[in-house]
Amino acid sequence: MNTYKRRQTLAAGVVGAVLTGAAVLPSPALAEPGDDASVRVTVDIDEIREPGVLALSIAGDAVALSEDGSTLLVRQFVGTLPTVTVTDTRVADEVPDGANWAVLGSATDFVGTTGQAPITADHFGWKPRLLDGGETGLVTEGEEVVTSLDEATQPGNNVGLVDQELLVSAFDSEAVASDSYSVNADLYLRTPAEVAAGAYSSTLTLSLFE
Image (cartoon, rainbow, N blue to C red; front, side, top):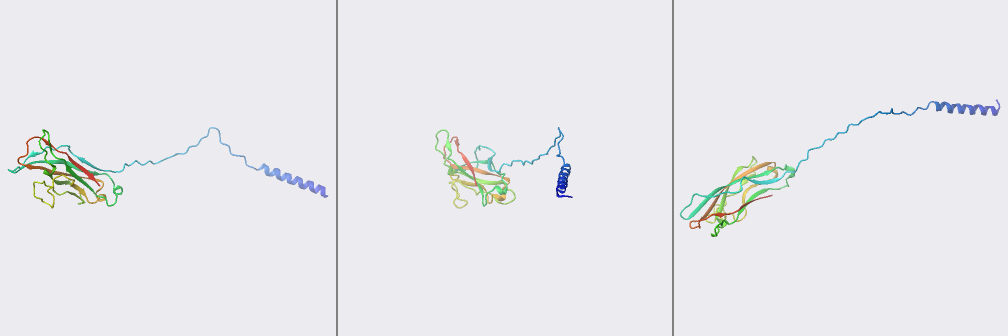
């Protein structure tokens, strides 16, 4: 076979190979019109938890003292402080490290409604009584504060409720969190026997500190 024919034969073989290869290429996949597919999407949403709080509440907003236990020299008027409740809805992680809380009380002078001389707050005392201190032993009532007409029963406690005096406290806020505690107090006003007759009023303020 001469060179010219050999070249024609090879060229024909190459073309044939190319055509043969083109014949076996796959056709692209086509979606049928109207077909669809879906994906399920889910999510879990946690309930929003409000941070806990430390709060004070009082079962009433007034106390009427009545005379009981008076002597020839001292007139005494007594009553009971409405129940005071400290509620802590915090969890331990929300309480500052090393924190403790306390409820303190102080009173204003007893002012007469018809212009009589006031009875100063040092004549007004209390004896706190813990009603529910939980099981930790870390919540305790304050010491008795007697009046300026009394002999001191604890060093320096015959001052009345002039300044902030302790009603109840917790040594460790974290240890007593997520619970509530209640306290009241015996109240007494002691005056000289010659105190002017008439109606008097005072405001006893209780404050919660941490």
